[in-house]
Every structure is written in C-alpha cells, then in structure tokens.
View 1 (cartoon, rainbow, N blue to C red):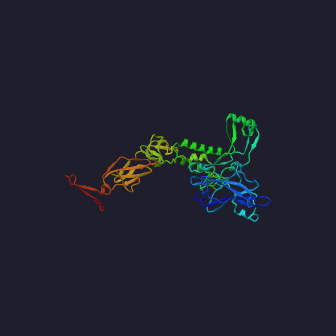
View 2 (cartoon, rainbow, N blue to C red):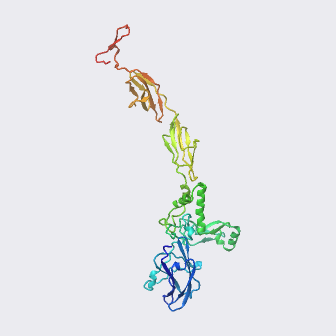
View 3 (cartoon, rainbow, N blue to C red):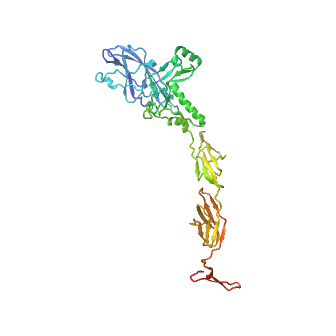
Length: 461
C-alpha cells in the first residue's frame, strides 16, 4: 500500500485514425477515493462527447492494493485507451484480451517524434505473471513448464507435431518475480506435451473427434501446461517423503531446488523464467543419502587377538553394523566384511560401503641366545628389547648388551605388524670383562668362605 497510496491515476482515450490524437481523460483519482466501494467517472472528449464510463474498485488484500478498472461500453472500439498515472510510487498492471479484457499494445507504436506522449508509455513484459498470491508463497514450489515432446505418432499412425523446441521453455509459462521481488517460479519441469492414461469415455470421444490427441494403442491421451509440469515435481516430493518419511517441507523444497540443473536453454540461473533450473528428481533423491564415511583408527589387517576402533558418521538416529553392534563407535576384532546401515533424523536410510578385515596369525615367538652379557634374538623384521617389562630406548637391534642384572625379553614384529614376545630371561650382569681362562686365578683353594680373584693387568673390578 505504501507504494501506491500517493499514486494518482486516470483513464484517457486516443483517436487512431486519421492520426493519433489525445481526446480526453477522466479525473485523476487515488485509491482513498474508492477503497472498498465502487466509483464511476465519465470519460469526456475535449469536444464534450461522452467516450465511455469508467468504473473503479479498490480493495486491500494483505499488504497490497487490488485495483480493478472497467469500461463496459466504450463509445468506439476504434479508440486506444490509456491508463495514466502521476505522483509518487509504483504499481503493476495486468490485462489480456483472451480473458475478455483489453489487450496491451506491444507493437505498431509510433515513435516519439510522431507522437511525443509515447515517451511515457511502458511496454508490457512477461514479468510478474505468476497466477496468484498462493503461488507466490515461500511454502509453495511454483513450477515453470518446458517442452517435453513436440513430435509424436498418434493413434492412427499419423505423425503429429506442435510448435516449439524440446527442452525449451513454453512461451505461455509464467514468469516471475513475485510482486515483492522474490524469485518465482522455483523450478521448471516437463509439461507440454505429456501423454498419460485417461478415462475410457474421454479416450473414446477423442479417438472419434480428435484422434491426434491419442497415443498408439488408444489408452493414453495428450495434455500439457503447468497442470502437467507441477505433478512431476509433486511426484518427486512424494518419492523423497517415501524415502525420508520424517523430512520437513523445507528439506524437500531445498533438495528439489538445490539440485535443479542448467543447460543451454536455461541460461544463467536463477532467473525469472526457469527459477533455479530444470528439475533433476534423481539428484534430489540422491542428495538425501546420509554421508556414510566410515573411519578405521588403525589397519584392516588384524593380528589374532587384536581389535581396531571403527566409527560411523555422527548425528544419526540409529546404527546397525553387520556385526550386530548398534553404537556409533566400537572395537572390531573379527575377520571378514563389515558394513553399516543408519537412519538419520529425517528418516533417510543410509548404507555404507563394505570394509574387508583380514585376520592373521602372529609370528612364532622369538628365542634368545645368551653369550655372556650379549643377548641375541632369532631373526625377525623388527625388534624391541624390554627390561623388567619396560621397553629399552633405542634397543631395536637383533642383539643387545646387558648392563644391569634383571629380567629381559625381546618383542619382534613381522610384515603384518603383528608381534610376538620371547620368554623372559634372567641375566646376572658383572663388570668383569671376558678374559681368557689362563689369565684368571682364584685363591685360596680350598677356601673357608673368602675368595680372592686375581685379574690380568688392565682388568677392572
């Protein structure tokens, strides 16, 4: 209403022959003059002739003004009538001769030099042609109509065709935007020409009178328009809800609109003819698939007796692993395939790819050979020596020299990453270096408890 409250308007008349000439107008009005009531004005020519009576009716519809202008019996249909406006604001106007109203003139107009008033004329366009307010609602998916078929064979085997190009927008498909500037239509779907099953009585009548509208076999009839395009989108929504029974209308709408596609016909999207593009029902349904990334925190090759942490996607309503587990994260210790089925908050079912786990036996336990303070493991890929149950830093060779008395063992690793431990070996460590037997003497012999050891020169004790 704010855009129209300061607009003043009138109806004027122009003579066409022998030349264009302005003949007169009604008084200028504002919507306040006849809001909610019928008002009439006489349209007088400059010569005082009555050219017609103009009826006005304005009403509020939500935040809009709905203005109707009517002239039941103009003096002559040879005149061209103009809707004139002045003041501040803006408005949209609609009219079409096929609805029994005046048609808007878009061709055969004079130049400004020929008729200066034509400089103020606003040519009709295809914008804001959405059928009514309900189709402009954000809660409604409004569908544009593009050609499905333009050539086919009818029930009598005759080739038929209609004007147009397959894949292109049907000329009568309504354009947006809405009156407040929002994008409409939302998507486009196939409408003209569509064949579907029809009532037997209707099919019989068409075969008798309009056989070109019936497909071979006589069981399917031709139709088209948005009345055919809209059910295509409706069916997509139904399939989505069948797959995801708890999905909201916003989720369904976003899936349909977000996967609409562009091609050479649509041009740059979005636009007021195609909306966000051509419906891609398959892509909309695939979009509903939950993200099914599985995480394995380790290797899929399991050593006998070991397990690995596996995790499914977050924020699912339910989890069912092929192992029987029903939690998001668990430790898996079995060989063979592992997969996951989830249900998300919208009720969408998700099925993961299958992981394959292999279980392998550990390597044989290593054996330790002792040669004095030197310990040697049997051959393996990798080694780790332990002292009193604790790994010894840097002790990763096949051999290890003992420094302290205590318990030792070695852990080996094979190519699969599996490990095996040796038996524990108690080792008595001394600070005496190995010497030849002839260089070492003990005294006295026999002894009563005190024993002396004589070392060679350079020895330590």
